[in-house]
Length: 161
Length: 220
Image: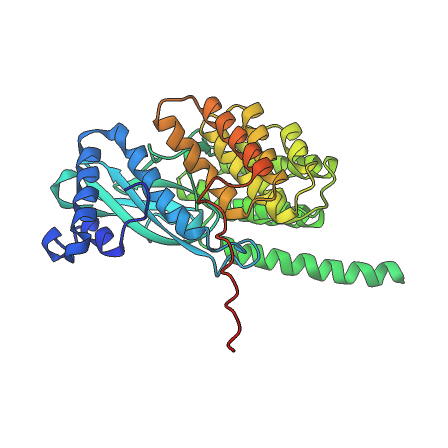
């Protein structure tokens, strides 16, 4: 799985939008592998980084084809699958440099009863800082991403695409 | 007379900058923070510094519910780091460019020193490549890669003129190595050796550009 990015249909499967049976036969194995990884994540919070970075590595390979991103950042877009485990949360969103730290515009979607929250974003290639906002009040860095001091005594996660 | 002619456009430019900052901050920060950021932003812009990091920090602090006085302190801190980054880049022979200064500010906030910034600037890479290098170096610092290995790896990448995509892939590759059980320092050092070997001998089999197709013989 680390050798390629998830197929868009597999991402829909991870988001809970479709079932494994709805995948074309040639994508079933990839879908099963993605679900297996998701299940592994569900059992152990510390496995989030590995999955997140695998997904990001796949995205990165696709993004490499877009080289002049600094010259035309608006044209160089990349997708990012954000994934987090928090069973007790009622509402989780993403806030960061990509949405002017607005905690209301990028909600994560809960996938089933397991507490896996996901969002698939299309962002300009480059670097973004972000944090999860839990139940509209608690700002939490992504445990699966590097983080920097935010200047307010907390941490911001860093995503490089 | 000449002084007056110069002052009028500069004043107009400052007013335009102030309006632009005010628009971006509208409804997102308290009036006192907006006033502070407008004032700092105009001064920063006059020194060739980017204004966006100041605006972002003010909005971030307000969104997080941080008290105004702490937001003001954080914005001033960002301004100071921008000055530090700009000076370090000038020391390394890089002319002022707002994107690269903002990247240097990020690298400093992530834990690199002004000497590290200067060291990367002295490599002589293009400003665009240096901007990417500084962003990635900051990310590596956030991942726990020590300064020596960090600067060694990014320097090697910049020297070899690798495309931005390859440099941007470095954090993911370091993380993959860390997942296999090595330390961040060992991961970065290993990638530096690999990059140096690749620069010397070319990419490993199957990784480079494919050989060109032979030209078909002309039709008789």
